[in-house]
Amino acid sequence: MQRESKIFVAGGTGLVGSAIVKNLVEKSYGNIVANYHSRKPDEELPIRWEKLDLLDPSAVQSFFQKEKPEYVFLAAAKVGGIVANNTYRAQFIYENLQIQNNIIHQSYLNGVKKLMFLGSTCIYPKACPQPMKEEYLLTGELEYTNEPYAIAKIAGIKMCESYNLQYGTNYISVMPTNLYGPNDNFDLEKSHVLPALIRKIHLGKALERNDWETIRKDLNKLPIEDINGTAKEEEILTILKKYGIKTHNTQHVTRNTDLNDVEIEIWGSGKPMREFLWSEDMADACVFLMEKRDFKDTFPPETKEVRNTHINIGTGKDISIRDLAYLIKEIIGYNGNFYFNTQKPDGTMKKLTDPSKLHALGWRHKVELDEGIRRIYNWYCNNG
Image 1 (cartoon, rainbow, N blue to C red):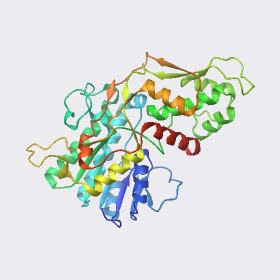
Image 2: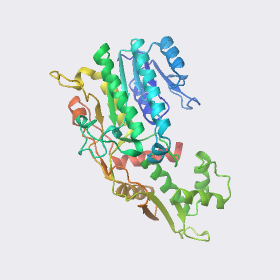
Image 3: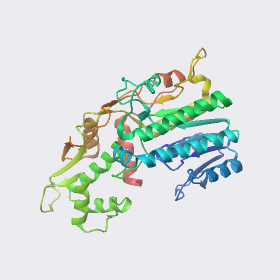
Image 4: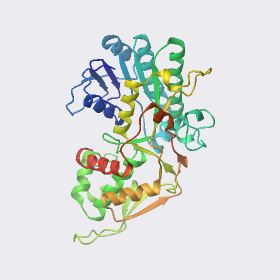
């Protein structure tokens, strides 16, 4: 990529896309266009925003014919945690297939020089050997709760491979591990585990300190089921309890030296192991690969059957959900308890990437988990 090359970031307002946009701007790329769906971002960046519905084939076709981007980051997707994935199964498979089909095909028709497709490590089998290597794709059944999303992402990998092999395109697929960072989703119904824990523990800390100013400020920024900071205390306590943040006190304390008896519910046993990557590290890896590597670099030259050309992006380190909760508790300063609800699903017990392929291509992560949690909590308090 040249600094003046026209670059399209599909999904530029999300966790992944916004991190890629920021990285490109920091590296002085000056011809960036990114899409938004409903509301134009508030932050001032030297890029051009286009309102574009990526589910609409005609709109995507018109956009590509008009803009003629040279490089494309396909970071747009319908994403969510275990509850959203299992509840909105049809939407997850349909919308993700539609978005990637529209963008990958129009990239081919309009002569895009290079495209990067971003997926997720949920593409790997439920009982995948650990750590997960790229070669383990399609060697076993998927985790049931996110099967529709995973199937869509596997289809995207195979679409990129197939266009490369038939049409000679240069499309790279990357599979980031669990990401967290600025512009993350903190909606307690739909968020992933790390931002959900951060918000629940933040609210739990405020509740145990009887800090209603912080609670109301949080709910005004991001209401829970239409309950915002103007609601009555009883309504707020009821909705917090529904989402696993509850106090056992019947009367509110009045002195700062006293603490409410607060308990936070966490789904599952806390035993599952998860890997987390700072989103801005992920973006740096993506831009590095787009600048320095091509499709031909993703498999050995002597390969007869080209497959599994995708690249894991991860740290190669994991932590249990229980230890993650206690790490966040320590960083935020919450003093209350946790309740691990074993009646709720755990999901896959271990999901750790093997980033050896990425390391061999020349990139390694920089931000460790404790530092990343401090950064994202600070971001949430000031911007979330």
